[in-house]
Image (tube, rainbow, N blue to C red; front, side, top):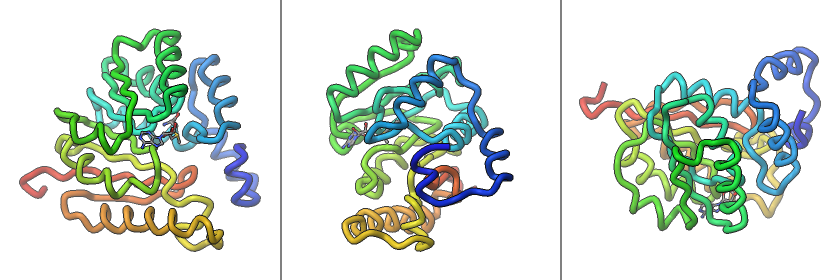
Length: 224
Ligand SMILES: C[S@@+](CC[C@H](N)C(=O)[O-])C[C@H]1O[C@@H](n2cnc3c(N)ncnc32)[C@H](O)[C@@H]1O
């Protein structure tokens, strides 16, 4: 069980059982690297979040995947291992993480299928072209709403926008009190959830997986 999950309080034994089922079956080296990364400042996706993301990736049959917030590229690698013919574009602001991710792509043999971009997603997104079947939104939470128009433009019909960390310790849904210094962040996430949920071009579900996930599917242009 992760440190973040422990913060949200005790789980029952039956939840531990379900969590054990939701643990992705990954390459042993990748699993070990994920365990180390979980102790970092910007941890990789939680086990149940990653399991859901991999399920959605396969369900959507995405051939092109976009990730906003690469970190060390561990979720990128998991996605490319699950979707063997997919190509992934991923954006990271931090140069050290970008370099580490590039090393990881080489060491897992997926570098030919990755376009790793060093830069601020707010600058990079408007320059991207083409259609993506899946977008994993996992960069700065305060920017989610700002990225939404570009994500929508870049998604193909029936493409999936998978936004992570949208409930944050119960602060966003009000089940836990938000610390003063986090109130602005929570308001930004709420605005994102309001906007994407009320957009008629998307159908959205907010799930309590991990720290909360919003899964939005882009409707076809015919409105069906
Ligand atoms: C939660 S981590 C991403 C974890 C990664 N997706 C994974 O599952 O392994 C968020 C990442 O977003 C990056 N980031 C923060 N601001 C950014 C920005 N403006 N543009 C692009 N990346 C940014 C951070 O440096 C950090 O590595």
